[in-house]
Picture 1: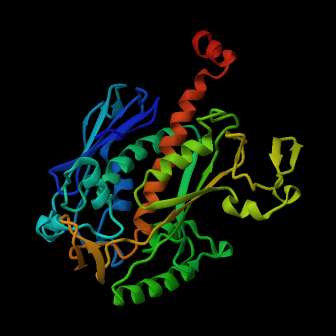
Picture 2: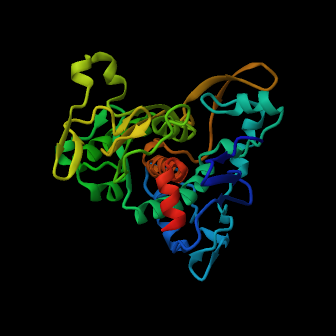
Picture 3: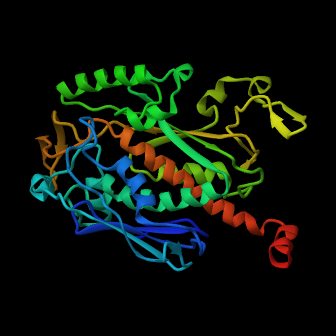
Length: 366
């Protein structure tokens, strides 16, 4: 299977299946000398692991990471870093029946058509558990970004019809509410909405927002590797994401040029913009303002209502899916969006080291 590697300077390759023995990632291109231990990575994995609330799958997995290579005496060595998380709570029998049919909204049909064969246990590589490798690698990327004074923060902006009120923004609530909303009141309403959907054996989608601060100007390659293009590609590679917006996103199509343009001004601290409709990126290059992106997440396709589909034999049938599934993907996907944004940004930061001759001279001569 091609397509399991992301990045060019800081590259990651994820491996493993939902119900296989283990799942993980190999990181190449991490600089030597970074202070790193399992605890640094575990904090991120704990944010995405299942069973954390009644709104996530009740599959019980500790998702405990082990560093197999690339770290010695608490510091990275510059060699490939292999991170592994064992699968400990497989119930593959829950999926025996789906070997004969295609679940609506899942990758079952397309995998079968592409490979003529598929791992139907929990979806194999198309399972949300594949994101464990992304999060583990993203935790390492985020640690490097923090050393550079760059902070990546994602949160739930909306679930179904319930959106946060920015005037009530509480960053601590992101890690404390079961919805990952930074608004306690909106979270309560979203929880009520989800409870009603669960009673109807249905699911919900939502929007995740990611804000990145501290990014210097000049990051991003101006043609095919624009910063916004690489961020969008990184986030769109997450299975449940169906759309990505940068800055004002789709709203710009309804604005005039005078409304959408961000006016520049200068003061003693430097050059700034009065507004940030562009979301911190101009011409595919960071402009020094906070980078803002939003990922639109589809409803969990595994619902417990009867659904129409076809079998591998091509015959129409009605099915009821079994197993342990999230009624909403959004809260557990927040950290995945955060980590993929971190990986894309770090990769371009590294590429930027060769953008100017004066930078090369400074690095090698000073």
